[in-house]
Image 1 (spheres, helix red, strand yellow):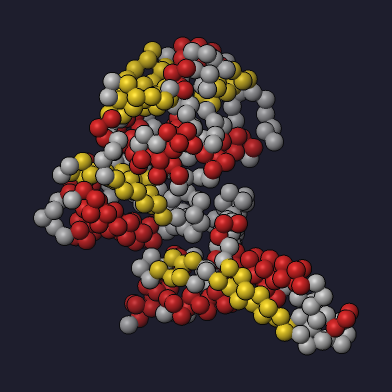
Image 2: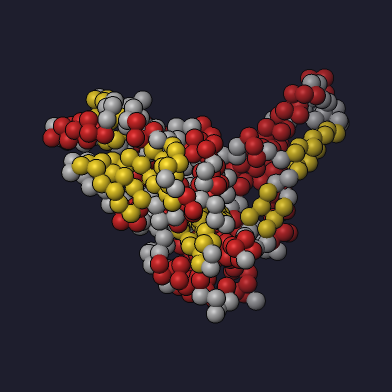
Amino acid sequence: MEFDKRECTYRIVKVYSVFDAGRVINAGTARGQVVGGVNMGLSFASREGFLFNQAGVVLNPQLRSYKITRFGEQPEYAVDFVETPFVEGPYGARGIAEHGTIGSPGSLANALSIAAGVELNELPLTPELIWRARGAAHDLI
Amino acid sequence: MISFDFEYVLPATMEEAVQSFQHADSLRLEPLYYGGGSEIITMARIDQLRTGAMIDVKAIPECKALLHQGGKWIVGAARTLTELAADNSFPLLTETVLHLADQTNRNRITIGGHVCGKLFYREALLPFLLTDSEVILAGPRGVRRASIHTVFNGGLRLERGEMLVQLITDRRYLDQPTYTVKRTKIEYVDYPVVRICAMHTGDWMRFAFAGVSAVPFRSQQIDEALNNRSLPPEVRINQVIRNWPLPVLSDMLASADYRRFVLSNALSDTLAALELKGG
């Protein structure tokens, strides 16, 4: 990840994901599951979220205002598997559908916390949120 | 889906367009001049806009102009952002529109619809504010020529039934050293939190802004403060932000204090780039 210390903006360059898949049955499909899941996780970690006004009305009910990552913003994905056969699964396979989605927001938040020098434990990780978190940290010093 | 009925008119002349508008207006149809339709269609589909008559200006020859004549660059209001970028007569405008919406939308957004529409960012207006361009307008009282500042700087001041026909720019401004910067919330394709267009004309720098406040503008006071070379850049920038002439927006894209932070960095980059380019 590249982080701009002045602007608090960032770019995700490369993502590594390794899972214990039990046994990989179709390598292409398994990789597709992980890449799709990581992408979805990074999208809601970095920008997704409904915004409400004081009356509880959603302010971003369309894809014009509810932004998701675009095709051109994809990082490079390095996906690999560990195989520990799962005795109860078919041919030793284990479900891998959601792991990418669950793991990626945490890894983005950790990477950004190190880069920004401040604990980031809220989503979405917009540059404004990081800027605010860093400002609060400076105030404490 | 658009859930209401409306008349569609495709006039061949400016006079016919204005007459169609007046006629529909007298029938209380809330008519609209129609360029590329991106904004009208988008808003009509979610019921944020209703109209009983759309008057398409794309068949009017003057609105399709795109030429150099007598030292001026003339742009018809019905020309699309893609066409203006491809023409590339004004590199600052090209750079500005290429970071505005996406290609599919730029193919249909017209410069006239962009600067006369309801969305207030109007980023492609900024280069024309820097060049002190003139506009040709057609309305119930005939055709008039006006400075872009009187009609578009700091908000729309078109008269009822008036349409933009052309933007006219002095050719000597087209190749000056320029700089533009756009900062968004996070997406590359989004409305600006801050957009600055700037130009160096010999020993004087000009600046125009969109996204910071609820209207795009160029201000004499800001130009003067930023040109005050007796003060270091950061002092000039602080002064400008402290005396910002309009309320700074606080909305879904950014809070006002974050906007000021982004503006300060963007201005610092702009001054550095202009001083480098302009010497």
